[in-house]
Image 1 (spheres, chains in turn orange, purple):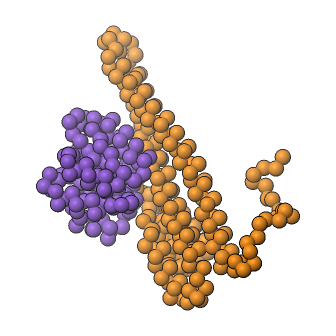
Image 2 (cartoon, chains in turn purple, orange; image 1 turned 90 degrees about the vertical axis):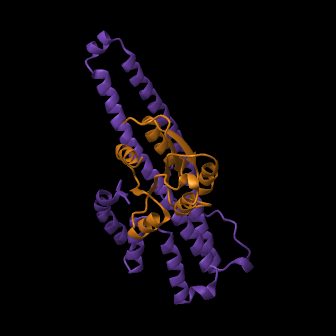
Image 3 (cartoon, chains in turn cyan, purple; image 1 turned 45 degrees about the vertical axis):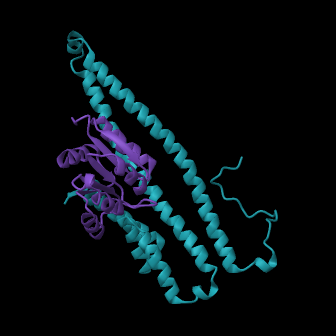
Length: 195
Length: 124
């Protein structure tokens, strides 16, 4: 049986070709970018459903924990003494674990936001390449870059963009951004400033 | 962390999962949470009802968080209400724009539940 990760060589089966009059390299590029966007969108929709289910489970767990805590507080004093604070300790441990889950869930939100920007970039590029005259002008590319740059909200996105505009390969840019991620997390995540 | 049961927090974020995390954190501390998915929805609520604190994201469809802050500050009932921004943006420029729009404080996502509650208690 073939696994999904296995390389599938190009098939001999003919795939529908566009009419010869519609075929241009630019349209093909735009179509391929559209394909990437569709695949990403489909994967995101699937993940959204899984995360929704996870959040429902998390909410249920939090309600159960609160009910347990209330039950513990209502126990007769002799029973509470017998438990010697063990119930409270367990409830406190669950509370700490759930606080970590709250932080972890927020990274999914950040991921969705960043992928939204990738999606917009793919759409913009697909529209851009369809105009052949535009693609031959350096200033048009600069304008496209500026538009994409304004999209980015996180420091990670901005850093990768800057590095690649300066000529780094995608691999180098990602590696460098990853090296800075730890320092960034220490400096900014959860940062609070009152004015 | 104890909180007055009557205190209402208006939580604004276009992400359903973020709204859930904020709600879980705040309700666990005893606050009443009203949720809005963007600035327009939040403003509609604010025009007819009061909140003790507003916690808003920045990048949202229809109306972003900074526009919402300016609109809320223009309402008599929200002139002095604490307003915290909760966002992935950590740039000084955006923070400055937030301050000018009327934000009381700026929190960079991901938030830590205990720190968020401590900050809210501080500004309320």
